[in-house]
Figure 1 (cartoon, each protein chain N blue to C red):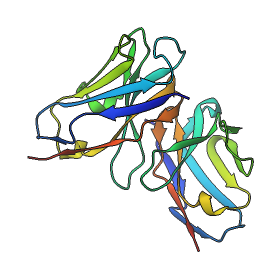
Figure 2: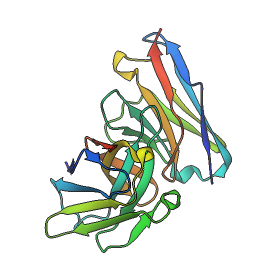
Figure 3: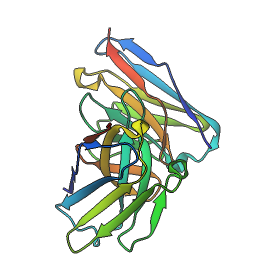
Figure 4: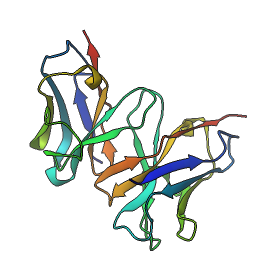
Length: 104
Length: 119
């Protein structure tokens, strides 16, 4: 069973700053089946990135995904106020524990 | 734009069966190449995949749920359903119906419904 470990648990940043979120898999996984989601309080998660680096429909280009093997990264180039949320990585419908991006 | 809406009891007693239905609007279950199914999320945890199906009835389930789950489809009503038996307090969660790209990622979610298991 693959385990996805996200770090850090919480990221405290200011609007306009760059956010770098990490996800490490317990074994090598296919990037074809790797995704990132954003979840705001009281809402369902929303697909941001699929196949490790492809943006889902309507997702702004400040969101980007990279990685392969066991290490994957979600980068938000310049944080907007609406980006403060919890982010989850996922491989083949197994999810990580999440990273909270909060306002510093 | 496909929309999904969960319905069903918000309170289930321990050892009983949890039953939820998802109504799909804005698109046909049987006319699409997508899979349909269920996710859940306990407070403070990441989402957990429960299972999904194709409109032909082919189903896939999370092995960790140990055969307690059945997902079925009614294409005439454009609905699909979840039944989970022998529930315990650990099954308390927000349950989402969802649209999937097979077993790869979740394309869309319902608004979610809180199900509490308690006597």
